[in-house]
Length: 318
Image (cartoon, rainbow, N blue to C red; front, side, top):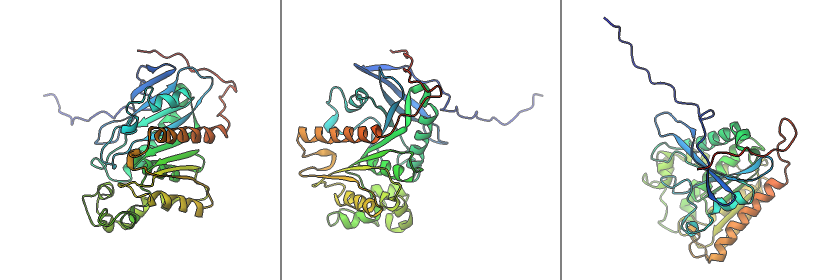
C-alpha cells in the first residue's frame, strides 16, 4: 500500500526575486510596471505596486511613494481623486517626466486586517524597493512619501516611524493625524469615539474610546520628533470630512519637536480639493512636485559600486 503523507502547501514565492512584469509606455518619456508583487502576506491577497519610471535618465532616480486614501477601507492604488482623473498625462506620469520614480502601492485595508498591518505593508514596500533598486534604477536613499486623506495619515505615520534618514520628506493632503482628537476637532455629532462602525474604529479593530492607547499609537502626532523629515502639509479650510485642525495638530507637534513644516491651509477647499478652482488644484500638485524636488536635490545621489553613473538598460515594452 502506498503511504499517505499530509499535503503541504509550498512556501509563497519571494517577491524580491519574482520576475518583473513587462514595461508599458503609457505616455511619451514614461515607462510603467503595473501590478508588481511586493509582498505576500499570509492569508490575504498578494500586495502589488505600480511603478512609474522616466524612460531616459542617467543614473538612479529619486523615488516618490504615493499612498491612496479611502478611509482605510477602500480605494485604488493609482487614484489621486476625481480632480485628477481627466489629467492627460496623469499626475504620476508628470512626476516620471520630471525625473522621479513613483510607486503606487496596495496595502491591506481595514476589512482585511487592523492597524498596524497598513504601516507594516508600507515598510515592506520600502524594503522591497531597496532590494530591487539596482535593477530598476532607483535611488531609494532619496525617497519621499506622499498620501491623500487616509493615505496621508499612513504616509505620515510611516515617515515618522522609519529609521532616521530612511525617508527624505513627506507630503500630506487633508490627512487625519490625531485619531483621539477627531471628536474634538469635528463639527458636533460628526465623530463619535464610541462608534464601533466608524472608519477609525474599523482601522483599530474597535471603537477608539475603548482602544485609547492604540488610537494614540496610530496617530502621526504621537511620533513627531527631532529626526522627523521635512513635511509639506496641505489642507482645505472648509474640509467637511477631515477637520483642518488635524493638519494644524501635526504642524504644531512637528514645531514642538524643533522641525519647520510647510503648512498651507487653502481657502475654500473641501475634501478631495472640492471647491478649489482648476488653478488651485494645479497649484497643490505643483507645490508637491516642487517639495519633492527640494527634498531630493539637496542630497547626493547614491553612488553605484563602480562610481560611475549609468543608464537603465532598455526594458521590453509592450
